[in-house]
Length: 148
Image (tube, rainbow, N blue to C red; front, side, top):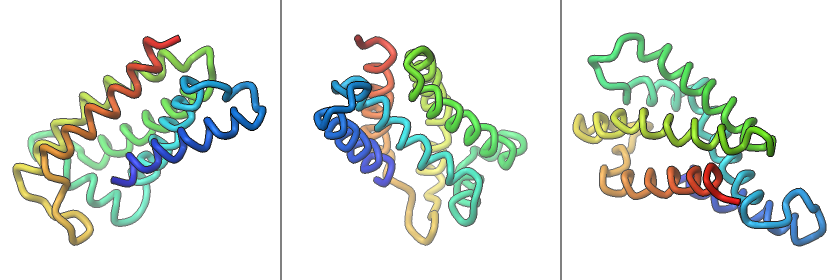
């Protein structure tokens, strides 16, 4: 749920900043770019530190090699994508890349739900709820990629 909150709060604060006179954020489209960048920065940090990293490694389907390396690589891609979202010239491409990354990582969520993993002492997000969230995140990236 934290990524959704980061997306919503980041977008709202960026939009308010635009309304306060910062022309680069004057509109929903640039505010959404910031919100999505905040979300991906938050999720990327989890790929590198502490219990969240361990949990993400556990989510990687067992048939894939080097889950630790996969988690590191996806974290780097999320950070690069978040930076790309903040640069108007690269925002569309970054959003498209992040949408594809989310689709590529979704099987890990399916695998974790099917294996009934507990992460940080709590069960993983149920697959139905996770699917709805993933659709919302991919839709936000699509709006940036194909929007004005």
